[in-house]
Length: 342
Image (cartoon, rainbow, N blue to C red; front, side, top):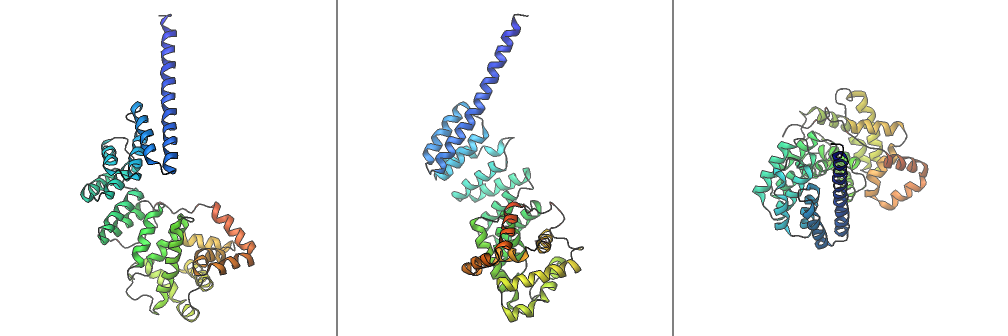
């Protein structure tokens, strides 16, 4: 027995070394393939990943990378061949379903895609990613009412995922609704502050405020049975004549929104707590709310004028810019979803 112990120890050491080598190999394969994908050389990425899977046949991460590489290479049939097995795996994650959904949508396989999303949401009922992409599929098929229900469910279930706010804001802007495009659009640019989509939504916000104040009757055709909407419009009504006389500019919006924050917290904040307005109040107290409003609206209205503002208000701009880039905007997981059920 004593003679067997060193042998057993040697075998364990060999097995551990092999396991470590396999882990290293997987990471190396992934990095090599990702570098090829960054260069747009998807064929080499596919080659490297297929070779890697020969010795790590059941590795989910490599399989996901391979299916995605096939997607990027527009080889959808091979991508689906790899990814259609994901839903049956006990270790399938949200990304697994996301990749399969992308492949199904690429070939317009609507029935299988919808079936897959439903199964995925049973497994991950709080995934903002899945609600968002399922909603995008519904919208592409002109099922608009289904799309907004899915995006709203995504906002309710996963309030810190930005994609559902982006799509919902664009949806509401195209309807008669004057409130939710503004609310969701501004939440979006705070969750996703420096992407290509941020500039798009800033334009939507500026146009959304013009839409809000175009008619002196702010409550016309609005969901005033909703407590949040009614409170929002009640406070905004008091600023209607000021905007009507001075127009919608970064400066007028900064003045309007400053008064809005003060009135909201004197009348509604306790009954309808809302993280976005708490953030506005925080910026106001710190002397950064004007800079924030310039960041939201100035870059869209007149970029040279905004750049000039940053030079003439350099200390204020630098203070806000540093704060903005180093803070994390986060909404509470529950308790602040005020939309009327769809």
